[in-house]
Amino acid sequence: MPSPRFLSLDPAKQDAIVAAGLYEFAAHAYDAASTNRIVQRAGISKGVLFKYFADKEAFFLYVAHRTVGAYLAGMPTGQQDLFAWLRAVTAYKLQYVRHQPDTYALFIRMTKDAEHPVYARALRALAELLREFRPGVPLSAERPLRPGVTSDRVLNLLLWIANGLQEQFLATAPDEVDDAFDAAFQGVVDEFDRYLDIVANGLYERE
Image (cartoon, rainbow, N blue to C red; front, top):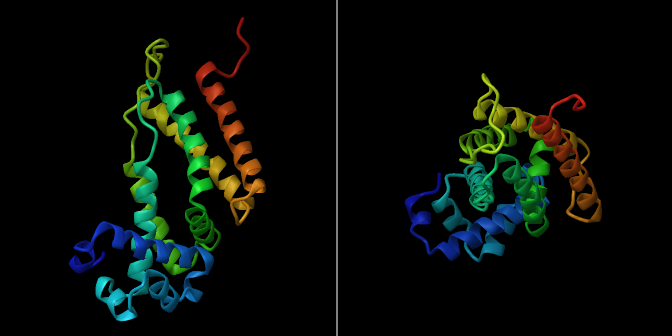
């Protein structure tokens, strides 16, 4: 956690320090990331940085947590149907990463070296943050669920599918946001849409 001194800073200054950290941690593995470069980019001294954060690891964990928090804060809202919301979320992910390449690069770096102790700690914290995020979006009122099927179970099923596809994507994901990324991510979006269709319409041909 940052110190009260950091939290008392002007928000724009906080953002500049976090952005400097995100840039460095995205460009370099954790062990190779330089606090000297971070403070130079942020326009502060190293002594000041460590008055804001206990050490490099504490700063990294805060940067990762705040980055995911910013992503969740922009999640689409206003959809009247869970399937419409999930489709909107997939489009949002693509656009977000397109405009925030450092966020993508950091996430790829962590997931591809998930056994690193600092990355592992960060990923556990981020997983908990994501689990707490539950959209208040209903299933379609036009197609009532059959007895025994709840909206929570449907949401869990779809999230499991999405997470499985995400793991497949990350296993071969491009390291940078470029045309190859767009093509790979769009493939995941299209495949997820096929699974949504199966969940919504069933496994078998209609009579």
